[in-house]
Length: 234
Image (cartoon, rainbow, N blue to C red):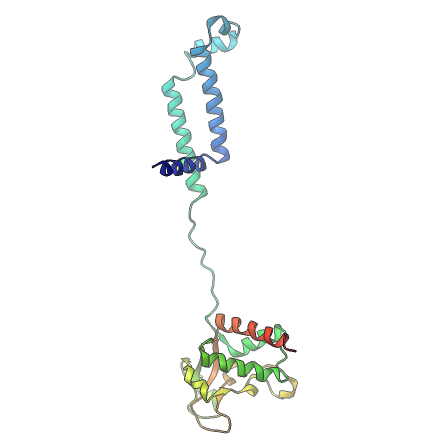
C-alpha cells in the first residue's frame, strides 16, 4: 500500500515538473499566501501601515475567497495535466521507405570491395566459397531464377525468384566469373545481376539458378565477418 502511494506521489511530481506549471504554482502560492495573510491573519494595526494594499483589498473585498483559490489551484492542475500529456504524447511512426529484403549479388560484391576486399584476385574465390558455405549452413538466404537451359541465364528473366534450398549448395557453387565484367583480368564487377548464376563444376546441365539475390541483413553481417577474417589472416 505504501509503495503504491509513493508511486503516485512520484507520478504527481513528474506531472508538476514542467517549467510553466512551476511558475503557475509559484505565483499561486505567493499571491495566495499574501492575500490570506493580509485578509485573515495580520492584525489591523499592521494592515493600517499598508494603506494602499489594504485599501485595494477593502475595495475588492479580498482578491479571492478560499473557494476561489481552490478553483485556481484546480485550474493549474488541469493545465499541468494537459502539459504532461502533450510532452509525453506518442507520435505515430514516420513512414520511411525501407530497403528491399533482397540484395542483388553484384551489389554485395560492390560492398565487399568498399570494405577492402580485392575481388580481382584469390579473394574472389574466398568470397564465393564462403557465401556457398553460408547458404548451405542456412546463415544467408539466397534466391534466384531457375535456369531451364544451361548457359542461357538471360532466358530466365521472366521466371519468378525462388528461394534456393540449402541442399542446392552441396553440389552447386557460385560462378565466380559471372561476377566480373568482360575481361576478367581487369577485375571489374558485372553491372547486370542476371548473369550471376550457380553451376556444377565440369557439368553442363540445367538445374542452377541465375540472377542470384541474397538476404540483405544476413549477407551484410556475413560479409563483415568475412572481411575481418581475411584482414586478420596472417
